[in-house]
Length: 190
Image (cartoon, rainbow, N blue to C red; front, side):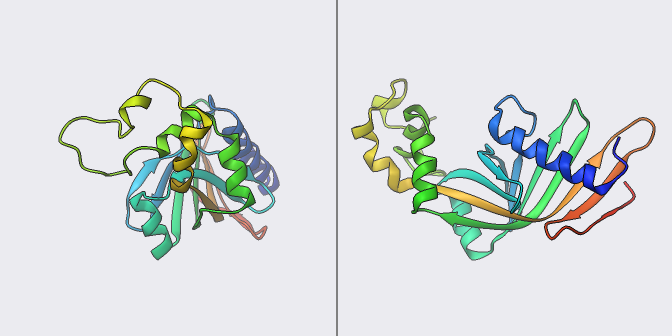
């Protein structure tokens, strides 16, 4: 149990950094909600503790991209069941389609992951159950040349967190803190 806001801030940073780099982390796939009150699970790809920026990958054709570009308010919810810690982040989202950071994110993805950007766009209607992938890539990994058209559908969602509501459940008394990116913070009743 933490007794200082600095300890809570360090815990927050450690949890999100671990979640970004460890696919077995409880917070690796948090819930991300957009301003239209739509929510979905996303994979946390990176976290910058200095700027409180989180990086996710998305399809540029996804409906959430248009929502974020129209209203950048965004929230994230993660929960670590074993540690009994919940994180609720609020901030703004930004979609990046081009640039060195996006190119690096694309380059670090596997061909198997990149194939998701080859098929139909998210939400495309189908008369039968479908993965949306071209049939030739349902089971097989495309090569680099086959993935060239997929790159135009790949985008990065950057979330700039402004505040984090950190909540720890404990039998001897829950603890809750509200932290701001600018360094301010306060304890609040759970």
